[in-house]
Image (tube, rainbow, N blue to C red; front, side, top):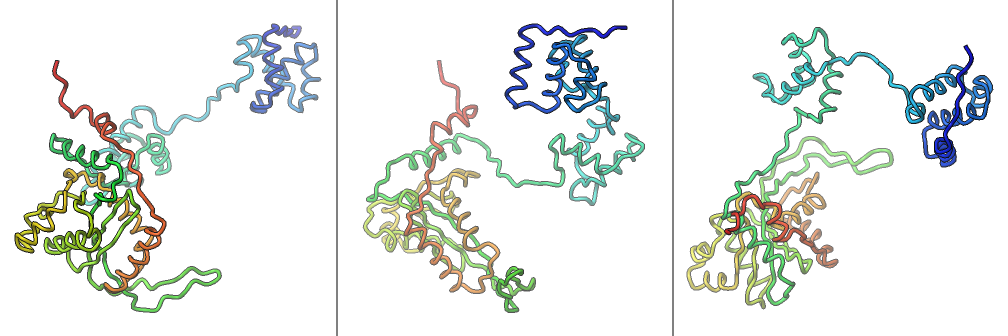
Length: 371
């Protein structure tokens, strides 16, 4: 039977010439384009195969596919049947549901081995490998062994009101005469080495003994003025309402002695009130301190609104993480050494989440407008 000849349409030839000229296509696609162009020019399959360094069968398959299915499919790879999937759709759905269910008694979470055995015990499959389970979970973006902690707030009118109040304070222009200060605290464990660490050497990292001495805990209060790029830490033995009251007096008398009013953003702990100042210092002294403070409370489960949380995270990464500080004096001096260059550089926090953003994100929790 004579070979069926190829006669490209003008637009098809233009498309193929453009394809081989740009060089932005896969090698197989370019080879098939050249096959069709040379076939249209009258070359034999064997001559084209010699020119393109491929088999004559490959040239013949491309030509026949063009004649039967058109140009687009002739340039594409033919679908390959491949091997049967290890799990059919029903078995895969069962595995996904299993991975999303509670783990067996006595187990913290599902493992690949547990899921594999359970699939066979439930007679879903005769045989199954943990690797097949892993690939199926990966395809469906499931990680049953991973747990993330997340604070899920209850969005109430009180939450929205407190959030908007804080965001309004953040939106105010910087006024050195009325500083806006974020306040938060962090508990730090004190650990001391029981053996002298081995210093860093060529080919060896710094080495410390796994054993250490526990030296109690200390509390770190953080004062942050984000728009001025100022921060200050205060180390205390405890975190009682008396310690908080003394921290507020320190804020007023030592950090901002000339500011008539200081806006303070902090969490809504029940002891963070002006009544606590009166209880600790008496009414006269408590009123003197409290009259210079304007408190703005983040809502319950809304600590993400406190910019001091960001600075505490920086402090943890840059100063405290993976270090052993054995006493309060060392902790305090290291924190001072950390904060000084940041203050000298006036490292600021530029808060971008506005009240308009909040109303868009939490739109469904706001009351519907009245007609």
